[in-house]
Image (cartoon, rainbow, N blue to C red; front, side, top):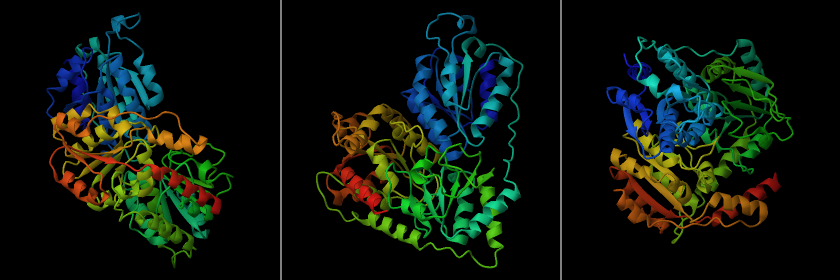
Length: 551
């Protein structure tokens, strides 16, 4: 059998559903084999970076890898930003690239470069197929590594001469394995610390939105009343309406919710990566008692020295703690009044501009309040990277896991539009909203054509300020001024029309909610332009600075 046919059959055996990408000469045999598959859908994208972001979002939403595809040379380099974003944000992904024939890899040759070496730092594993008979083993290993906690990207390179060669190899059966669980002695130690604490608090990281962890976390909080601070990536791990939800932590500056950590005598971190919220920001003196529960041991850091580590399946760790809590003769007597005040104060902030009636430009708080009102609990919001990301992190909250996707580790702009396309493929009957700044949106604007071709049921909201607003915000905070960060924009309504999208512009905050509802009712892609009032950035910085002084 032709090697590229075997490769596709191996992907089918692994349950791969989508390949996103751009074909080229050196992956032509693979693409022709893929076209014969009845189980895998190939989605042609307008740029390889868009393909990588689509595969990333598919992986984040499903827990299973999709593939992103590029040819050698520039096709591979175009993929790498989205691949790095996926790997650092713990999304399973297979990265497939072509390569020149093995007969010319040892010398200077057209578009040839060491692609495997380039992908090695941003993947869990990167390899080249050197013999067609090894394809089944390599694909099986790649998928297992991509899915294994903590999940991430894996790269496979297929040289063109090997793709068209013959092999007798057959796909391997896709075996799954149960993840290890923490030992009972460690759980007993952790439970003893939890039972003896007076003001414990939980910091929930991205591990809490995968693999039943959210269900066990909610049960733990119902039993104990302990408050939960979610990182940007853990939004929805607990319901925003629950009394124990203390909203989101992770802004570079201190916020109201930081007071819950300041007051705590025990911090329980669950599935937390340091890139989400570094301990030096919440444990500057390294003196907080910490329980670390995660799939991997704690990162070595001067500000993070856990008393005990629960290593293994996070949902099972929480289940074991829940069993011990339920065995207590009475619930723990915690002093959590401070956490309740934090929730009340933050709730007041969220409501502050819900009745705004401004014209011309609209406050970020109002936009996010109205958006939350028009979405159901299972609908999905994707944030690009920019000043809007900070506002989404602070002011948009969720009822369910994986309903607000924010790039948090690698933080790449250009994520939201292609990501929304993938989200609509995974959940065609849910509302999908992407929020981007005018800078980030234009970085992958070409995928508007992909969305139209697929009839993606998405709404993209662009916050327009004609500048790289987040950089202006940070420069102003640090230096008292900012460099030239302004740019022009297209006529958005003409752009929407040119790509076959519906277009809306909202300059009256009173009309915002109705406009969003109209856009979300439509079948197919819609573009909503909102001139945003980023004067609020400085006001928020001032407020957070005053909070810091008051602590």
